[in-house]
Image (cartoon, rainbow, N blue to C red; front, side):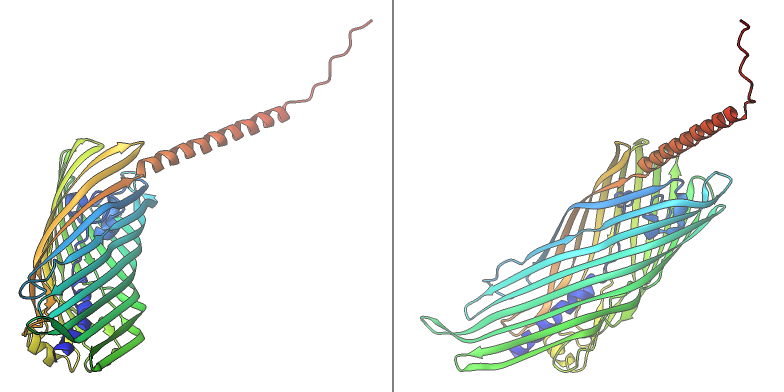
Length: 497
């Protein structure tokens, strides 16, 4: 039973990680928005509006090309007392990177309104809102047992979308359609020994190894609808609704195995592998409401509230029931997050920005397949559903902008801190599965650039050169035409002798 429980926990570990990382959605993307804490739904005025509020693309009056790139990110997670009771266990170690990236372009098209701006705005966006690499190693050494637990995670989400915004007086409406592609990989492995110790020495009585690997990918589409209202030149109100993603295709693979051995030989072994499983992790239903206030030409205040709706979904289908534990249904809870931002322009090209944001967990709960409930009820004390990891975090942001070589650049930092709980197992003692308190610190430095001024000035120069060339050709043609239309005159007669 003890070794089987350890096997059960190894199978469950990557699944719980999958459910946890799928619940954090408050991403900070773009050039201007990260410095303002992501409070951008009501004031977006660059290509990142395709993500925050497609209707706000109508704020763009010129061609825009925006790039938001991470410079460095540090993600440190600490687990307190979650490995085992007693002494002899070394500290948990974690290396993780969370690197959001965005590239977007937008331009006005079609007929112009009374202000001289186009009524329609088109945009194309490439987003990588989530990218993560994790390696966790836990080691235990006590008198009669030793164990090493290794967890590896790799995730990447890519979004490619097209957007359209229409200006209708003080109203603007817009829509974005994103194709989402996600790759995930989780691996967990546990190796350990159990010994019988006498007065002088210890003899290894049993050794075991259990490992589980889960990988998958899927492609889906997700629409985002936006509304923007500008009742006065100072106030703006934005609304964005994101529908859940609709899976189009994808596949997953699942492998698990383990053995127990002693001096008498192999006591038991088990191995299972399957491919072409049904895999999906849909985005949650999301509703963002934002308000912006502009005081003169230098001050901007903004605030957003985001609601994430409850959602149930199967992440993996096709794994047979029995001793293997897998989530038959992952349940997201209702979450509300907030964003606040402030901007002050020292000069038109030197803005200072500050922001606050929250990133609360949806506290997912997993409905298990048949045959697994009794095991977890005995080991985890969770009679209804197994305890799932969760963590609530909040952060501050800041950035400063400058114009260099006609390119508007922004340099900033995002710092967040969170606390929560996660699952940890004990390979020694009666409690095999328990809560462990965690805290996490994330620090990210980023740089953003907008090439709009360069592109527009270059476009103007090209247009002026084309017009100048056309004028020269017209003048040349006119000159040739005038020369050809002159009447022919006879040459003067020679003088008489």
